[in-house]
Image 1 (cartoon, rainbow, N blue to C red):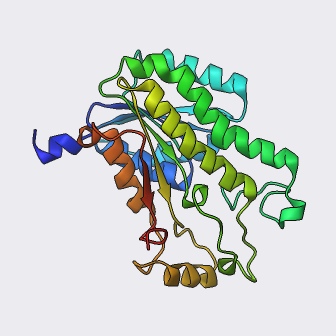
Image 2: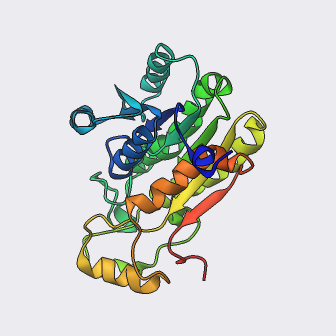
Amino acid sequence: MSSAGMFSLTGRKILLTGAAGHLGRALCEYFVSDGATVFAVDLDAQGLAAFESKLNPTEGSLLAFTADLSDEGQRVDLVEQVGANTDSLDGAVFAAAFVGTSELEGWAVDFERQSISTWRKALELNLTAPFHLTQLLEPLLSRGNGPSIVNIGSIYGSIGPDWSLYEGLDMSNPAAYAASKGGLIQLTRWLASTLAPGIRVNIVSPGGVSRGQHIDFIERYSKKTPLGRMATERDVVGQVAFLLSGASTYVNGQNLVIDGGLTGV
């Protein structure tokens, strides 16, 4: 097999949650441009539609689905809709999540003001949804060609926050985010063992991704990173594509950290 063929996503059918988000859009663009059929899922119907209208695929294609993945019933309905459009999937990427900048009450605030209700919402979307969707999608994935699941984690699922990065800024690192991403790393390992050899399951854990944060945060973070910068969406897209492709057929149960060396030195 040629190197191009080994890494190609041409003809692969991939479900992607969080498709209207920063990373989701970048993943969609890459998958479709590489010839994949993408089942794109997001709560933001307008954002998904706007993105879809700007996408001019020459190789692959995109089918859009709107769903609130924090709702169990909507997860079931989503998989039924996907199943009505295909009898198999070759991959699934779970990128939908509440992140550090999500505008939730009792979320990105001091520890004593972080609310139980928001904690539960975060764990439902960030951890329970990938678990439940994997259960629901297993029959479709089992009929796929070398099926692979990729969870989107974070370095904060493995390390504690460095609060000096946030000092004096309107930014934070919620406990529920860290806990849910830590749980997702372990869920990945459990699923990788349980669903093998038919379905591979891995997780990518990005460090800080540059998205127009305060300049002080960007400078502080970059100084702590051996590569001297924050990540870009492209840095993450390539690793996800690798885990979905034929180039990674013996990679299973791994946490691929993408942080410029921040946690590795």
